Image (cartoon, rainbow, N blue to C red; front, side):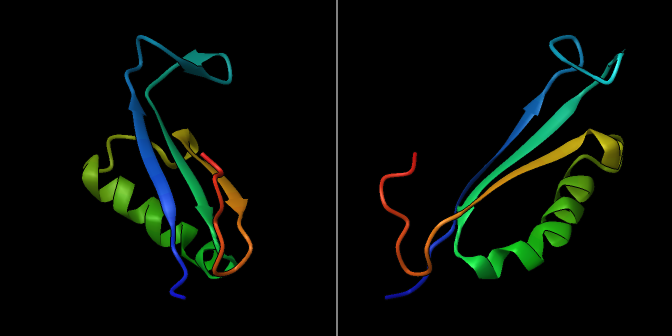
Length: 77
């Protein structure tokens, strides 16, 4: 069985959210994956930065990663 990765990236306009005490844009990366993916979080962050042309600061990119047992993701979402 091939390990799978389930994920999504949400970009939220700055009018709708804040980080800390400041209104700002936000990107949330949600992952449910086998253990090998956790080494790729920095690379995924770089992809988001490239997509936003680095207009979104790293401090506004959040990752919510959950570990799924290798080769089995179940009905997590």
